[in-house]
Image 1: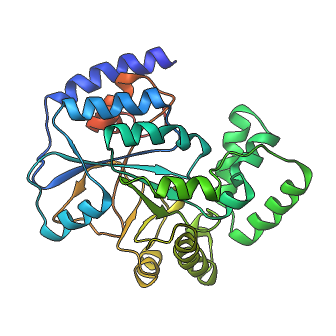
Image 2 (image 1 turned 180 degrees about the horizontal axis):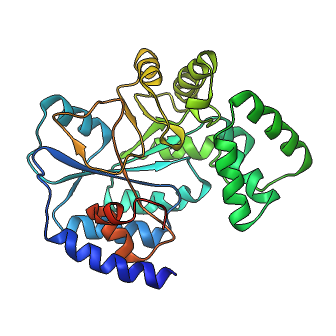
Length: 287
């Protein structure tokens, strides 16, 4: 399957090369979760070889204020603060790569994410189906079921520790962003819980790293107009969805910014086609 996807990817990558985007008004926005060092370095080298300037979210905020860019810019974000992100720190420092790590707070202390328990209890397509089902639950029912599951099984650490996140935050080119407290699907939460997740995500991360938290990634990309307003009132400057397109510096809502998803388990050309945006146009379902 991987070879088949990469064959499609090669074709879509070549198509994408024929249609460069307007880099004066658009910014490439990429995200993944736990890329390998090889995957990460290969991506960085390709971007630089192809004329992209890697920028931080602080720089992106300035470009959004100005509404124009002078060169081809790209932002890279990592969701969840997975333990494997520790392996990227030497490469980030070596290549001076601006990266934002969006960290949920509870896993830093508890050691794992709620979906780890789902995967530990089921396998294959059944696990993926169950995961989708749990994402659609109202948060009260979700909390009850998760508490029961946690009492039955244990899972190994998959999240960075507090100390590891502090170390990452001290790397000059790394910014830390919020990913809520417990990573619930915010659209399934009542207002009080949404407020706690958004405000707690900022304040508790500030306590951990001693730096102001200005940026947010919505868990699973789910948000609403109400949630955007609550994010703004909670102090966030930028917030990210998982909408698959380029950032438009002139028209995009700062609290609903898009990102292209990379597949760290995919092949080189699948991911280059994702960078080009052509993969998402042809395979808008998960493939």
